[in-house]
Image (tube, rainbow, N blue to C red; front, side, top):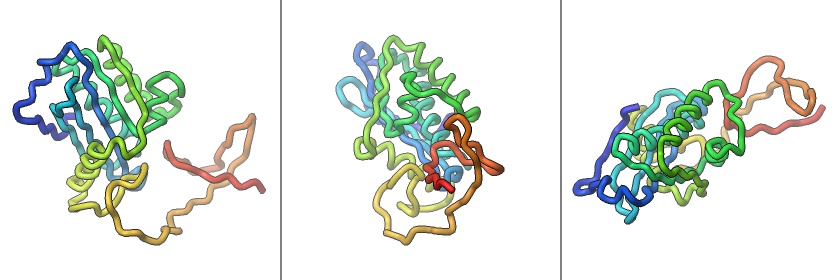
Length: 208
């Protein structure tokens, strides 16, 4: 993932390598799966922004985009000799998976998780914390800009799938996006009878 790297003029990330760098990363998908992208902002121990990362990922899921942002940050740190890193994300799922609180069941996400864990183990110190979307505003903006670039849009024409991404005009709910799937429950697990749902989607179960 080469992505778009915006190095900040005059910033020298290795000067304060003895401290901990902080990265805010975010990813989103318009449709889940749909046009996806990530954004990240990296600060040195003094709080100075040293890099901004952004990339359009094509048609992917929201969780794929979140992990892509995390991997971009970890690869940037490895490439700049950064050994202490704190990553902040508004994806509670990814944070808990990286911290070992949740298992990674998705075959599509597991390779990304394994690569992220491998890169994190290469650091002297690695922390990952969850933040509400308001605390990730700039990374959120960069992710949206990546999606706009990839789809040829300008401005805030559509939010990423995992939440409101910047100002937007209120619109009526799109009832046509509703999908009804049948299934059964065994040992407390819902098994679908045909069809599939992407990771990270919220569902409402109605007992019949």
